[in-house]
Amino acid sequence: MDASTPVEPKTVQNRIGYARVSSIGQNLDSQMDSLKQAGCIKIFTDKLTGSRMVRPGWEDLLKYIRPDDTLVVTELSRMTRSLLHLLETAKILEQRQINLLSLRESIDTTTAAGRCFLSMMGAIYQMERELRAERASAGRVSAKARGRTGGRPRTDVAKLEIARILYQNSGKTAAEVCRVAGVGRRVFFAYLAQKHN
Image 1 (cartoon, rainbow, N blue to C red):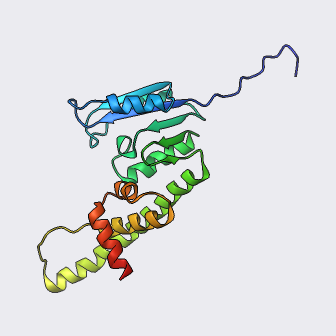
Image 2 (spheres, helix red, strand yellow):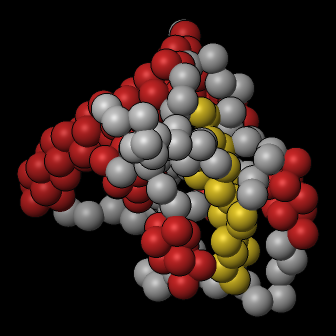
Image 3 (cartoon, rainbow, N blue to C red):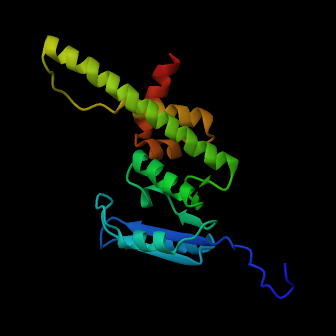
């Protein structure tokens, strides 16, 4: 290489924050403070419900963020609406070589443990889909034979099983795995006690 040829500068890893609240009246301050303390050089925000598909701040973030940057959120629920949406988003970030850091759940895909945790969640989600399909098939047969019965909706056993597997294998707290799986802690501990009997 010629001595006069400019050397490409090494890519600098930047932390880019994303904050969201689910209504216009809610305040972003605590999320903004946490993201700044985590070293974010730029923060994108949205004020709208998680069920809305259009998030202008999120779209702007995806246009701005670059390979080797780290996307930082205070918790996963600020970025995604469900386990499926989390896995889809994580796949997009991985394809673009963007790291993910969730402060509350302590998930950091720059580490082997963080990548493993997301991989486990993907495998468990696939298992949940297959179990749901099996239950639906068995339920149709049962309903046809006996007729439908009403009653109070029960917590999805597949979600409880996801929480149990994560709790026993990921090093996360009960509160963290319950938040990720979308189950209540009281129901989760009752399920654990039942499994141990």
